[in-house]
Image (cartoon, rainbow, N blue to C red; front, top):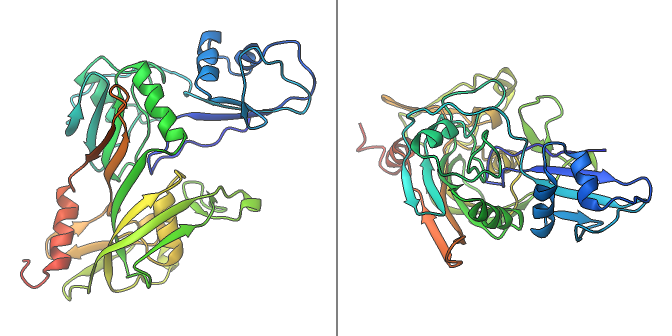
Length: 350
């Protein structure tokens, strides 16, 4: 049995595949041979590297490549996704925050998919990376060169891209162990009663809409998800502001969002798909313009925000080369800077 978890598209979880098997009999083969047979695109050397990196566990414990699986063993493996076709280089603009021989950090713009998938073969961040340079880690193959984690198409902010395989594994392990600290900024409809709090609600696939996630009980397929929030600023609704309708028919039946607004700092402790968006929406404070989860387009004069007001602002991690703690920040993009200017000073903004 192979229970693969879907890859997240937000909140920066490592871009990897999760495998799980239950062994039904005692085996004479070693576990590295067993895993090569189960995942055809991985070489034995590749599997052994995963085992050495602690990415293979049996019954929750790290094992050696020489281990022989037994009846009833629960085998888990975290591995890079299957490599596919070669990527076409494209001159896509990249806002580089930091670069050295180990990795690159960019401030991803809105309306940019991280890598080709589901028929979208061009116009992605990966196409731009291949055009920018040829030295990227090969762990994820030609399809996702250097990609360690992802942000949703319309979420902006800091992303790390590995140049060498060694840097890739050192950074990927930090993502898997959740030792990387990520901070997001979001503008939400409404103001929470508590200035700061922890949202601890499991998340799983929405029962009715395939593209969406929802708060679900663990027994119903939800996976643990924890987010800490802190209100940074709060605003009254500008008199001249208007809220646009959602293009999603199902969302039009949702109640109107609260009239006030808040700038919140978000620190995800887990990396579930759409975690921040789902948690805030479930509490009744959807992200502005996140029409998939109950937010509304924001209009003020000639300004109109049509993508979720969510930005990956800061990331703290251990540098894969120097092994020193490092913090990088991504400046807010122009559309969110403008939104905050309007909310802070609606009378003086024209």
